[in-house]
Length: 104
Image (cartoon, rainbow, N blue to C red; front, top):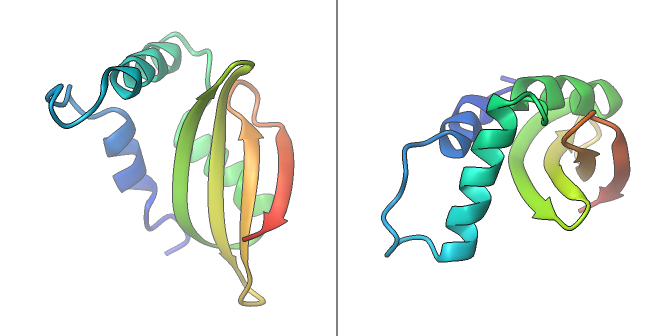
């Protein structure tokens, strides 16, 4: 069950447009930008990011988040490591480069 949340996270990222009442304009713009970047191949899909993250920190994926930063998109992946610790890995969404690994 390593990728238990992957389908849910992918569905959330690529979900159909949500009502403006539920999501503020910045979040809506970020969702559109992420969807377009993924379609153009400018960011890696979640499945590839999860492969990279779990190769570095083996365990069960708890949460995946895609954030828009001034320098571009970054994924944050929380993993319950085999030793019982929760680790958070930040990755560059364009190339999967690991930016940081921290205990959460």
